[in-house]
Each structure stands twice: as structure tokens, then as C-alpha cells.
Image (cartoon, rainbow, N blue to C red; front, side, top):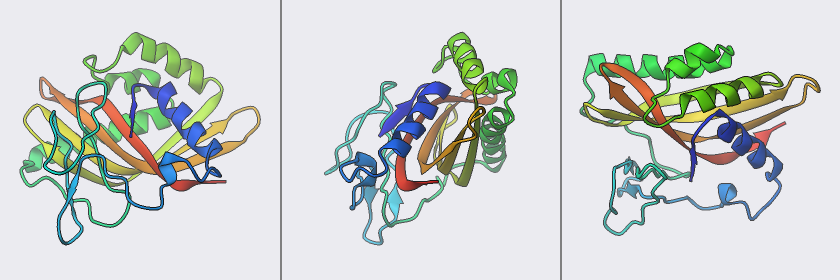
Length: 207
């Protein structure tokens, strides 16, 4: 399980996973399921254990640097939406998440930074790193199966299947990695912003 603290970390991980795609010992390519803290019921569906602290009964949780435990199975089961998400908040959260994705895809650094929470990011460091990276690369993230798996008035956790493509502007070479991501979003005065991202690669990169 990887916590991505910024754009450079995300791209570095994508490139690293692409580079090690032929390594049978890679943790991202285990033949079984990866169990980082979510319980699975008898039908194989996922009981989303993306929570604040502690351990679920019989399961070991992996806690990120921000103290949030994030885990999901890579095989089988289904992703289920949290039952307590108000309709208007679901719209707001998905719109904020989509803005976080879209602004970076088009290279709008200022708009992208507006989607981040200062609680989880050093915004000026992220600005410098993002500009430096986008000067030489094109980053395209394509999320699917956007699902709010945990919700409270102050925090939401959004699951997606994520394809990350990193293209070198000079050479034209591109690396594409597919994985699963949980994006932790925080409610700041009615605005949902990204606090942290947790990602694990679960499929072989495309050429």
C-alpha cells in the first residue's frame, strides 16, 4: 500500500511499477489477494475498512503516515458505496474529485492546487514540483468505478480504479499503470478537498 503525498510521488510510483512489471516478486503482482485491513464477507464483497485507527477483528491494518488505515482486496468481491452519503454531498464530492483529476490532466496548476487541502499538502512545494514535472511530461489519469466507500460530515474516502499515463514530451515514450486508489477528501467550510491519496498497482502496465 502506498500513500502518495504529491504529484511527483504519484508519477514516481507509476514509473517504478512499470519498470518492475517483469519482476515476479513485486508486491503489486501477488497472485493472491492483498489484504490491508478490509474484511470480506461470505459473499466476497468488501467491507470497506478505510478508517481512522486500530485494527479490525482478525485483520491487520496498514496505517499510512497520516494515521488513516486504507486497505482493499485486489481479487474478487465488489466495491460498495457507503450507505450514509447524502445525495447532495455525493454530487459535491464527485464533482470535487473530478475537478482534482481534470485540472491536472489539462495542466492547469493553479486550479489543481485549489483542489488540495493544506492539511495534507505543502501547497507551495506541490506547486514547484508540479510545474517542474509538467514541463517535461504529460500526465493523464483516467478514473473508473468512482465510489464513496466511507463518509462523514468532515471526511469522505473515494475509491477508484485508476489508469495513470506518463508521457515524456521529448521522446514521446509513455508508461501506463493501472491500479486501485483511495482518495481521502476533507470538508473545508463546505468545500471538499483532497487530503491524501493511497494507491496500489494491481495490473500489469500497458505498453
